[in-house]
Amino acid sequence: MELKQIESFVRVAELGSFTKAAQALNIPQPLLSRHVRQLEVELHQNLLIRNGRGVTVTEAGLVMLEHGRGILHQVAVAQEELGSVRGALAGRVSIGLPPSLSKLVTVPLTLAFRAAFPHAQLSLTEGFSVLMMESLRAGRLDMAVLYNPQPSPDLEMRVLHEDTLVLIAGKKSPPTSGNTPLKAVVQMADVAKLALIAPSRPNAFRLLIDTEMMRLNCKPNIVLEIDGLNAILELVKESLGYALLPAYTLSNFAKPEDFATHRVEKPKLISQLMLVWSARRPMTATHKASMQLTHDVVSQALLAIS
Image (cartoon, rainbow, N blue to C red; front, side):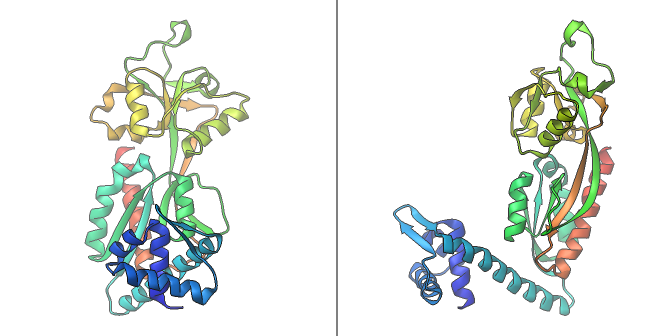
């Protein structure tokens, strides 16, 4: 079993196409096909099913894909560690960011990374918590910034920031039932009576809202499910409902004054923002330094708007 065979198989499996994998690896397609076939012969297993639309990974292929990613990651770690012996932090670092935070920290994180690690490569991915947890376990991400991740023996976690969700209303929003304007502080039981626009499950904010409502024997009145925080706020701005989100999400708007925020009590909706990485994969010196850099940049960005 050779590294080139493993790398060829992993790229084909990930891209679902021999043509795309050959382009990505910059090698002739016949050579790529030979690498994959040699691997299958050595393992006495069919790893891929070829069809007219591309390839499908077999059950054995899924097992090999997981191991293959790990092997390639270990090789990259070794190369980076040897590079660090020469005094330069190098290699590739992949970081996942939640959509609510991505716009706020992408630019400062990229600038800080380039300044601190000129010989390293940064890959930023935006996604929801469930998908990023899978990517961490599969080795596609080195670390991720996640809201309220579930504890897991194969993941390490470090608290970056705690946020309290607020009730966000459009300035044009009409008074609530009985023509009573919303107070500066509202209770969760009263929030349950409002028309809410929220992300669909398993979004971390939605799970937090549902859990806290359930403890009060209430059910949120979700009138619209929108998987995009900016889209949610656009609808709130047009007075089509209310949102429960961190106050900093308003920084994505040119005119945050178009909104009003109300503190939520009994209970407060406290969301933990955490830096998460795999407990089963070794961290290079570059990864460790990048973790501290990410912690600092995220913390400073959130502190600046709090």
